[in-house]
Length: 421
Image (cartoon, rainbow, N blue to C red):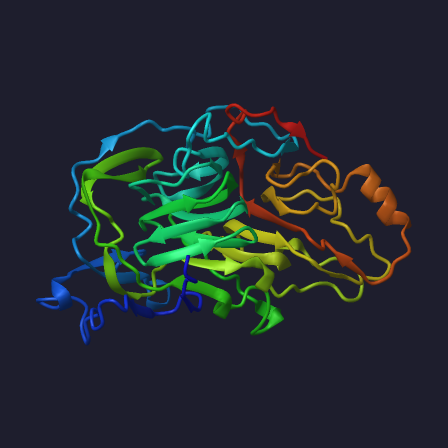
């Protein structure tokens, strides 16, 4: 596969055209009477038309056929996704999941959509306020199928296996230790090359942003230039009556048939795009004297609520770094939090739970439930001679913090919850 090209910059106003069709991007206006190459102009809005300029998101797509060219949507089986948090009673206990088993393709073929399993969530999908956390398990590519989410943004975290993601804006290759965001309404399809697993953080009604830096200043954490946007690429492919467009709408799945590939966008411009980010590029801020900075210092992306300083969800990582704090218990301290915390592990081992928390698994510490390091970790860290040390080498953990999170219940077909510390 040829190396893919990208445009860099978070939230930038960008423009791209497939080099096979030079001049396909209209000049000087968005919607000419006749587009170059007789393309169709189509706007994709990620915000209300009247949002302030600083938050207004939209892109113009110039495509071989408009996306309206499909048969009616019909309801299809939900599989293992849900948005009904009342399916089980609330449970404030610490919870931990073992790594989720990926079915063999010889036993059951499962692509990204059929392999989505909702684990937990909160809020109300119909009022566009809340979130869900899903696990994806897949062993086959999406063939003549694409997906789009009318409910919110998908932040995808591959843990095992790389993903080749086709979007209306172009192609992205996303590997473990990278993340990508497919924003609301964007159609995409995923090819896999082996048995594949990962995490999805879905937020309803808002978009992910870079966190404000405040006293940190102008630089640090995830730098805008390290976010990559695909360049225009199209396929003019006929699939008579055989291409399926799957839509998640108010938590339910619907499917429509059409005759052509949806990835027929020859050129585009705007600031509403999919994007990816390599977690190795995160510029870590840490304590260099004593005590801890709060874990919010590791926030990569945030989805803000209407309350200043309170997020619907924060995507946080725990990357390799130096620990140098004096007179300090260096692992994460015991705490109780008004935000619920879900954690996944991409690779390595988490410093506070080295034996019981494995890559591909998860843990959930709900609002105000106490949690912290296990007993062995506490004893060791309390007695060790302090010196500068590397922390989390070969490891990448990630967490999602949010206001209130309810577990869905027993993960279908997989081991029971394992109690956490």
